[in-house]
Length: 354
Image (cartoon, rainbow, N blue to C red):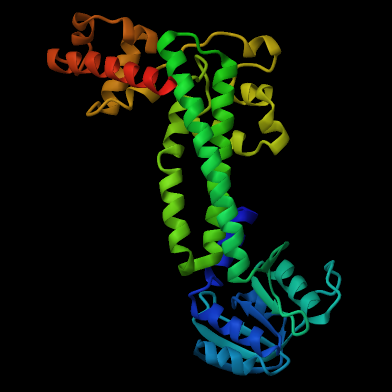
């Protein structure tokens, strides 16, 4: 599990709307401070000293009352039971820590030593800090989260609008057989930017929990089909004999830094078309997966057969009704539907460009 996945899973446990978050907010308002470990693995229990065993069902009120004592509170893995209270945590003192306060230093070392979720609530600063492994994350209040999420949604709207325009322009070039590697790299850049923007919103939504319903609906509307459109875009322009899968290429694009993503040559290299300036100017023909998928009632298997029979999208456009009819799985009626559907799609693309 990556650090990002570990953080997101921890944020889900602590999200607003959960009983655990209600208990933490109660402690925060009372300004008593707290130290809590979510997990009872052997690694955790080996550093627990003293305290008293409870093994009772978790409730926000119980957490609030137990936090009045100085010691740590130990919950089980799913945070549904309180196992120990007023316990002392004795992590390895040689583990490096950037914290200065005893409570937070203990929390950080415990998280690094055990890999479990550890929460420290500052009595003086009134903040909740989450630790997991080497991760440190300060939970924000709902008002701040909402403001950040709305900013991210606004940015995503711009990314999506830009992506739609770029893809419309690319579609026109594909019908005219004038697309270049640079055009493809530009479209992939916009798609990856939109995907990153959507992921940022999802992270806020995880932290907002049940309170993020309206923003979640906006995200669904804005990110609809972007993931699949990106897959089809990459699949359309895979070089002949490319051994990597679409997902492998997606992973490599995700690993690019912001600066690298802004460089068309970096995207060109990841797509498998080299990294020279000359490569960007080369004309390139799509296989046709993205545009053919827009035709109604055209199964994926038929699209595969069309591309296998004619080589690329240009070959499919130029095919006669008789040639289309000869492709496996395509009869006279479907051949005519494909021909008419492509013509309507061309008209739609041209009208969008105007």
